[in-house]
Image 1 (tube, rainbow, N blue to C red):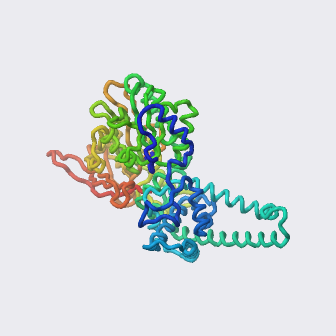
Image 2: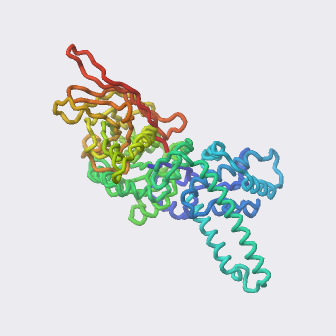
Image 3: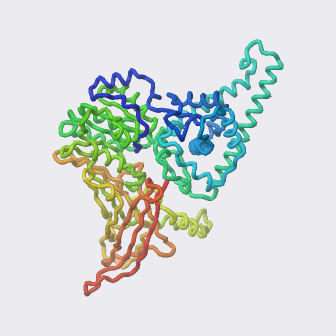
Length: 581
């Protein structure tokens, strides 16, 4: 789930319900942001930089004052594959250029700066390595980077106007325009179109060079190059602006129904009359469940522009007197008093759907824990859910390997090696059929979310797996993969307990399972049902360069206890895999 970013300038002075009315009267959703234009922002003296209420006004200021039309440098709005990432890089590339060329003394050379920036973008070609650095924001909490969907709409509108002008030049120039003027307009527009097409071709070639022969990982509806994704909170929050991600989560009935049941079935025992904080609220569905359960106040926080729709959804369903939507990064909102809480006021319950692949991918939990430690009511307050558990189990996917032996009566076995090379590069996220599981499901760690510390999210723990079929046998079973899943418990004392599981034995969820492949052609664990087990140490930690990615290492060995009780080892090895966006 998403967390939150830039905040309003303390729009709530008290916790009274009247504040919600004041907020609605302010009206414009764009007030949630302060926009800084590309060219006019002073990196040396930020406070002196002009501020804008909307993205459009910031872009228009650059165009009229500096002669710099940012939209003209973007790829087509229809180029879904490249628009999102291309816009992030272009914004940061422009901001870095302005920062590098900022004069110490203020001079009236705005047109010159716009001209130089245009030439820089037109003439510059970048290597893949050089381009990677522009995924990191130059300007912290850059509102432009938070509004890429709106940027795409503005680009689309501009393209439509260009097409309309091309089709009806007389209309664009006015009824009194001469034939010469119309002809000149057509030639001018054609030149602009040619220029844009050249830019688009250059951008596509650059992006193609970045993605050629690389590995990809699916993240919602977007496919991103995992090797060029930096530690980028901006990218993380912006990705939750995409509708398909929220649709996927809402359609996950295991997830959504569990939260609904846990909240509504505990209306009287937990929620009625309480103040609730929903972190990463998305469309606001959990906040609405809490309101229906009788909460007196619900604060719905998110850092992406999906919050605009959440506000509408809350109002449409008649809960805007209970639910207040706040846009911002939760740590920043707490630090700068950006939440609708009076001095000393705390929240009774923190509701959040913070889980990622293998539980800790994207690592949103630290933000939720920061809110827990700062503003949750001591002793009686609770996280909801309040317990998480990580499990592993062994799988055998013989069918995937054997498939290549006979493909429409053709022997394609050379493909096995290629496939195995791919499977053993990194962790994979996919649904594993329970019939392919050959061992027990062993819990490696449990977290009490009301007490655990940030350091405990990086952990190592022992495990032991044995064949699931308990019939004694000397038949050898290959363990091709370790399958990682998690369970979530809503188990606050004196309440109705609700749980859900992402294990292979359960109905598949949008989290699927995380799969760590051994090399089945060279060194995968072998087990017999004669007392042999696979045991070892399972380690999971956040990546040192990108804290939203996770690194997993498994030190394993197989064997059994001998007649004298001593351990007799059969095989051993180390498995290292990463899960990154």
